[in-house]
Image (tube, one colour):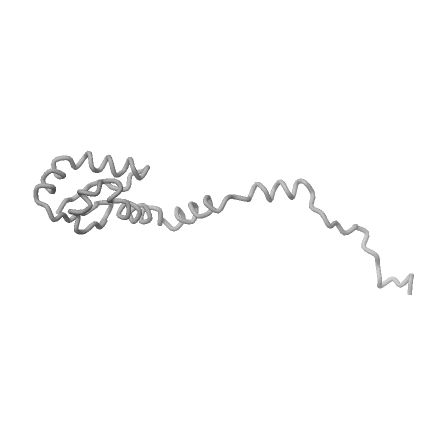
Length: 120
């Protein structure tokens, strides 16, 4: 039984550790959760929508409480921000400075989220 030709011993020893090259390769493929989420958002083209939702939620913080109190509705369509206001004088004042509002919103968000603002 000891010299049975059907039972052969393995010539390569079993390793219970990984080579340094295998560990280095695995570490090169590792990325943070934040980077993974950013990659998924980019792959599924959701980053733009997420930025739009974030801008709507931060409207009061960006524009200030007096303007936020007179804002009735905010929504996006094709990178245009539509703002429905309850005050005609405020609407006129903001229409006069549309480019400044767009610049302020994009600067706060860190990228171009809004191409145009329409005050209703």
